[in-house]
Length: 140
Image (tube, rainbow, N blue to C red; front, side, top):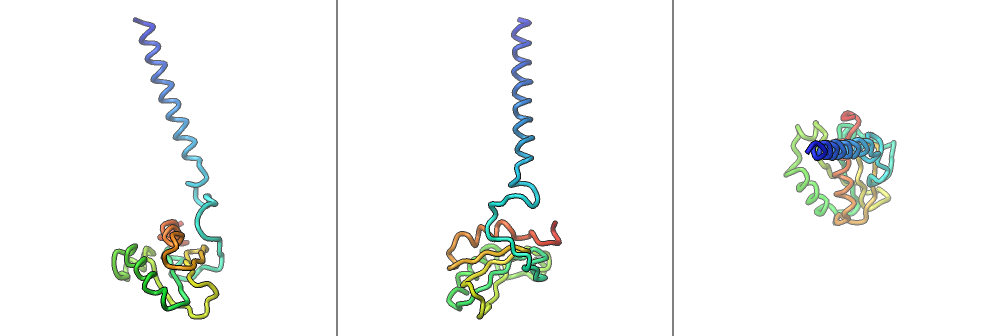
């Protein structure tokens, strides 16, 4: 009987120890640490420091007027409707702007990050927005 109690206690301690180790190593995962996670979408772009981006907003710029509707659909979906000025000031909205002379067809911009895309349907756009919306310099 005493052996069974010792064995049960040993198993409980081992399970707790393994769980603790898993939590410890998971907390040290680079993808979760500030500034880590080299697999984030887009590229580092130190020049992307527009005031809207500093707050944490994401800006989608486009060259071809035909892309406006698709980008508006994305923005409306993520913003939950038209841009609310208070949310814009808080840095939590997707903004759209036409830039006639930009080299790329579509560019997603966040604070010091950017991603070029060839269509509004590119899944990388939403991935970029999800990764960086609300992550401006003022949020760090």
